[in-house]
Length: 145
Image 1 (spheres, rainbow, N blue to C red):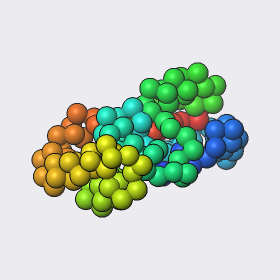
Image 2 (cartoon, rainbow, N blue to C red):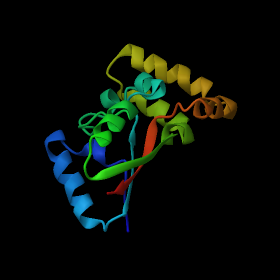
Image 3 (cartoon, rainbow, N blue to C red):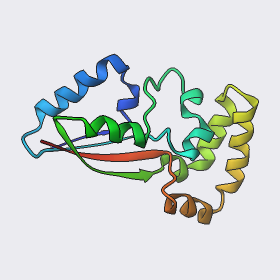
């Protein structure tokens, strides 16, 4: 049994999060796996792009690895198996930087996008960030208790 949600949970209002997670839990058999990805707002790369600011009102929730670890550590429903850094942003950095440069609400964020675009034209810089566990998203794997 497997349920996945790729870049979904951050679009759910906080007051509905528990409802959604409970429905996923109820839909899985014992030992079933729930895999999801979400922006990692603990990541310096995510912070310097400020996805929350450049994508309003689409991101209702701001997650980070630290918060997610604490949230699921106290869960009676889930065992946290792993969290992995990944990055849609790095896969298409030029497009994301152009988007941020057009939509970011501040001069600083637009300037950061311009600098990152130049730096991330080099694939070695992308590999270096991921090797240091610095992405823009995380993949979380949970198993139903």
